[in-house]
Length: 328
Image 1 (cartoon, one colour):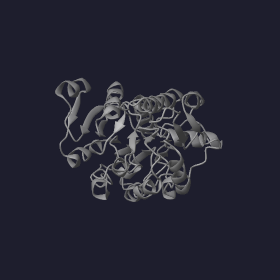
Image 2 (tube, one colour; image 1 turned 45 degrees about the vertical axis):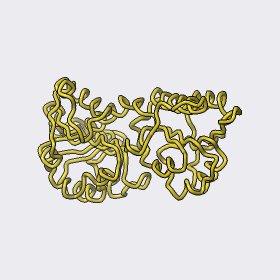
Image 3 (cartoon, one colour; image 1 turned 120 degrees about the horizontal axis):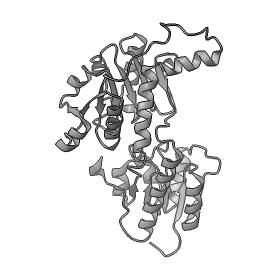
C-alpha cells in the first residue's frame, strides 16, 4: 500500500472512543447522522475508499462489489457475522474481509438467559400491567410461569456463545443438551455437563427450551423449519439471538398463535427490521431490537478489533481476524 494514510469509510456511528482513534490513524469519513446507507451510497463509498467499515445492516452483494471499482482493498466488518457480505466475490476481486469475533460472547450469552427468564417467568406481561396502571394486587394464580431450574435446554450451535450459554444455564440448574456440526472434546463436554445429540430432530423433541446459537449459512437457513418446529413440545419455548434466517418465522408465528409452542424470545428476525406484525400481538413473545451485544464494553472492544485489523493490513501484514470462504 502507498505510504499515505488509508482512506476509510465508516457506514454507521461507532463509539466515540473508536471513532476518535480511527481519525488519529487514518483518513476517515464518518456517518455523522448515523443514517442507514442505501445500496447506491455503499457502492459510492466502496469506490472512493481503501477500506470500508460496514455493520450487519449493510448488505454487500456481488453486484455491488462489481460496481465498486479497483480502489477498495479491505472490508473491515464491525461485527462477527459476515453473512451480509459476499465474501467469495470479495476475495475473487482482491478485497480482503475481516470481522470481530469473540468480544461479544459473554454479552450475547447474558441476553440468552435474559430472554429465557423473560419468557418463562412472563416478565414483559408483568411490566405491561404495571405500566398500564391496571394492576389490582397480588393473586395466587396471576402470571404463573415456569421454573427455570430443572428445565432441559437444547443449544443449537455449540461455539463460543453456545458454550457461554451452557455455563450460565448450569448455574441456573438447567440440564444442558446440544447439537453441533462437530461433537465437543470430551473434557469440554464433561465440564459443561452437556449431552450431545447427533440428531437435531431427536434433541428438539425432548427439550423445554431451545436456544439458537449457530451462524446463518446456506445449510442453516430455515434449519428450524415448520417440520422441526412441530417436533417441539407444546410447553417448550424457543430463543434466538443468532440470526433470524435460521427460523422459519412465518411457521413459528402460526404455531405461537395456535398455542402449539408456549413462547419465544427473539432478538433477531428473518427479514431484519421488518418484524412480522403478528408477532408483536402475542403476549407470550419477547421481542428485542437486536441488542444481544449492546454493551458499552463490547461495542468498544469490537471497534478495537476493527482498528487492529485495519492497522495490521496497513502495515503490510495479515490481519488477525481474516475471513476466508472456507470458514463459512
